[in-house]
Length: 309
Image (cartoon, rainbow, N blue to C red):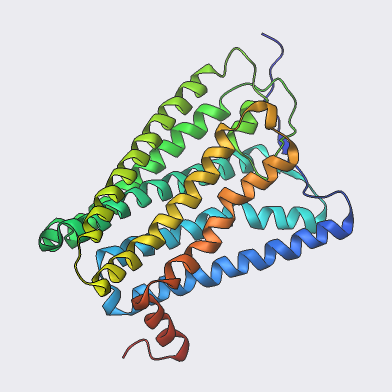
């Protein structure tokens, strides 16, 4: 084995080389971050304050907004500070913390999206049993299981990655501490255990994906059997936003992690990382509020100060 090291810091990839482009990156990401804070913050406030939204669907949406805020806050503020101060280093402990939080928030979001698909399946395919199956205690237990299991998974994943000796320097080809980029720095004969964990993770993620697909197959079959056009429209209005969020999250994340090495480049890595870690938390509030009349009404009351009515 070649000499291995545990560096005291990592060097992150800059978005641009010139000062003007760095400031442009700072301004663009600041706008995106503020939009994500505003959108998710409004959803959190509306769901928490409007008793009409105290239902399982909106309870899970509240949890999704929390996860979106956490995931975008893990990466964007640091990269904005890097561009503003032209300082691209992050400490070893800081990198481990960032990787842990990102794995935790993203895996929890995917697990929650799976549960939300199940919630829509029960609501549309078994409406008479919805209140019994999706009782308040059940919803709380499912959300707690998501937060707890993904926390343990993130601890295992991060501890396993950062216990590997690094033989290929300390420069990461990404603007945040992404675990695949860290694995590229590890010694070639000791990273197989982490690859094994990634394979298990991929199998579990694929299982969730299959569950979501099968749920929506059943949902669409049930919706198409609804006789009234108004009923079909109402059912689609609660399902299509969730399906759009799932599609955006899965497509960008999957291509980012499974793309062929021959297509890998710094620019492509940056673009894909933005698509799966920055864009979804910003667009999710907009997607959910566009076709959801109840949420739009609640947000309107919130903005006009009539949320308690």
